[in-house]
Image (cartoon, rainbow, N blue to C red; front, side, top):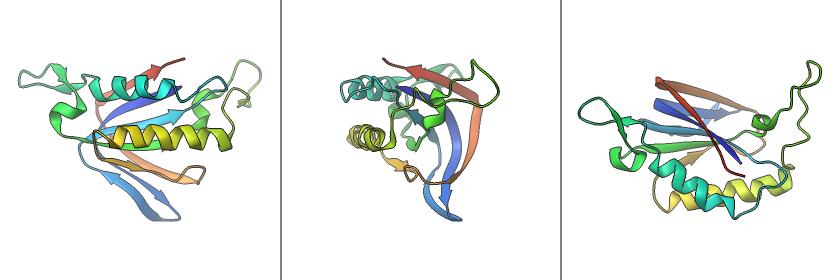
Length: 145
């Protein structure tokens, strides 16, 4: 499982020109699953995301988590995180988990997050337009196998 975390001032996701998810201060998560991922990786990733200290404290040091600052999460499914570009110019997605299984993990991941924090999402498998105002910019890749 890969989650690309971006600290955000404000972000939104639209499908068919309609906003389906929007946050102010918080995190945008681009979430991808690979063939070997199971439900067991989800609590570990949720804990990592919620406790990642990438927000400034009163001294301007990145020492606070999303929970500390009262932010929100915008979670977007992103199978292209598992693109293989080793051969040629056209990425292969053979390592990405199929949609039928990935949506189950994605939905469960978001359910676990929602137990602790407000979460907005895109629509799994839809053609989405994601607008991210990356704050910092801060972007961190988290991976759990």
